[in-house]
Image (cartoon, rainbow, N blue to C red):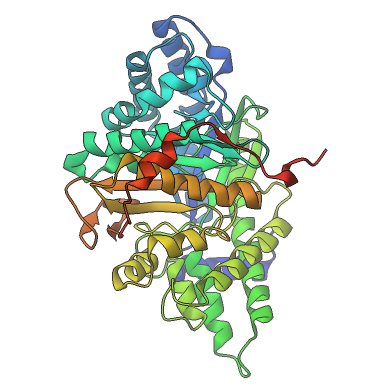
Length: 457
């Protein structure tokens, strides 16, 4: 439990530093819902979500009120739908996505994840149908999110899947052109996807997870920034090692808060507690930005020389502090750098400190990847696939999760602004060097083999 001093410090975080629990996510296995009849499958899924999620939002609100700590989002993460999709064609899976959307609406949750496939080594019939259904499914629904794992350190990179995802992103953007390609904000392409993360748009419930489980994602960029700012007023000024210790202690407190709330929600719903994802999840508002932390270290902005080193320190310290606070840390657990969702990162992109190439370099040490990056609408599907391939390679070689959530904004070019609203924020469209060679590169197909250090047995 938290000591009296830690409780006082936590209350100060709530009052001045934007501390919240970003997501409480109910994970549900759908493997007991399998049916070759779409209507029967839909009915089973609706029934299971209804039984387990009917009190989720109410309980989260009650626990949040009890502790005075906001729970920003309530979400549901499901087994990969591709595992149930073998008997169905893409149009039928679009109908199933609408069923998931309806279930989410009835439960009162913000998002439903799990319209997903794991294809790092190859495809089943259900995988192909689901990937073909993704653009229309995301366009036709409000809450449904999709993730596709196309690579792993154990299996390499499925370049055929990478090619298909470039095409899917392009189609989703065109379908939602009236909303600046917004459907793409609900689609993530992964390497080494974790099976238990509570954060959208990538959340799903992996195989080997409980039938139903509560996972929690915390926030806290503002808390970390204020802690660093206080340390910087000391004489003499702190060293990098001292600042790492400051971040570790702060991450410990934030993680403890998340675990306390998560366990209480799980207990009230009579479900097992899974993990705390201790990632620093930013918001597009002043004081809750990962990007602003870089300025506290003395940099002009994220993207300036020194940024990769700062992000490496930040990511490591957050993991060390959070791991000490909980025996069940999971998900992504690190620092997010979503361009549109973070005020400081968005401002750095607009000012020219961040290019897509610098962002890619930063993803070698962050906990996710190219996240909420808006690119010109005329970027070809092959070039999008090539960007994804580069990002997947970083994850495969470094044995870490990487991801690409790219939004080619129809009708807009580099330097234009796009506004999504809410937690999705706004962004400046980054320049992409769209070379025709990407077509020939992606057309090679096949699988990039796993690195030699994957042979660990």
